[in-house]
Length: 460
Image (cartoon, rainbow, N blue to C red; front, side, top):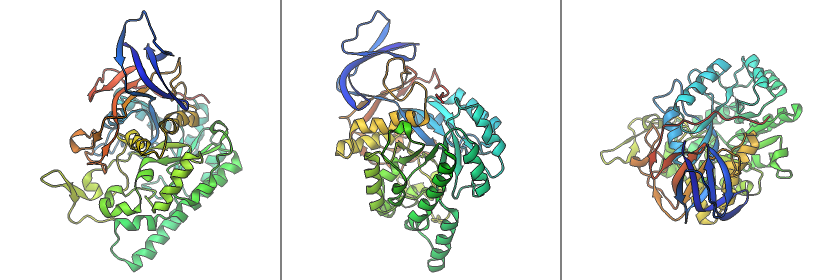
């Protein structure tokens, strides 16, 4: 395995930025200093003018493997993620079959071990009848990221709406519980009421059906269960101003028992964008009115919202209700409707660039981006020896050129689904190199796939 000496980088870490060198040896950060000299045989990288960040840790992705690999798989999506500066991911259980048992969970780990260019962990899924499997996680606290509960509409038997089951999970699970919070009864009521008035629905109706009340009621319910049992609760993809009253910034993240995530697409799009993108940006929970986006931005900056993720959820263009014309442009598919369109969008390849766009706009500092996409995720999940640029830690690192534009095009997409709602968007920053465990996996649009990522470990 090669050793590297990164010279003259702008190192962004733990709230400060400074010019320095980083020595990488045997997959770890051996030294951080200015003008490092070493007797080691190293590959020297001149990073003058580049920013060195800890690798992004994405706590919510859907890589569709196994069972839905016509949309995506662990190999393709992890590769796309690495090209976007993500060095570790945590993947959700809604595959086919759903990861409801430890045996099925280990099958996913085996796929990742053979195929993932990034580091990985997987959530155990919750159903209304797998409580025994859930409680087994208490003996495996160090090698599973968490337990996932879909408290709202989903597919198959992934929806958990039995209060007795929820009480048992929150009462018995000793590791992090991640929840998708939407209230199924409100969604159904909103849908039926709107459908009675408007037989043909369109994408702009999505945030009406999946409204703020629906999200708030479910998040409130999850928090009540967590407070009753003292559970470690992490609520995913917050989208509403109303929910923000449920979260606090009055204590350090390390002390919080209830934390919250925001996703890049909810920071980027609003309901006004349905006119342009239609079902391309249909997702659950829904992208909502502009005042909600403004509120979650404010909560992100004042630390009521703790981490930034993607909820990367790829579908084929046809499943979203689109196709490409002869020129390669994304156009509506004849006969497609709002109701037949799948919910979710691919984002992992561009999430860091999306946030660096807002750095350039002055909305957030680069130090805050690193905090929310790397440091805070590692702290929130108690990930061992990752998420920071520290001596002795794994060398999960990203070199970024903050002065080099990058335009998203069909030709540079790495997702298996082959499309992005960001096509045509020009970012003001480019991911130059990505190191995973000290291995230069991605550099100047070239991959070295000879070494795969590692299974994440947790200090619990």
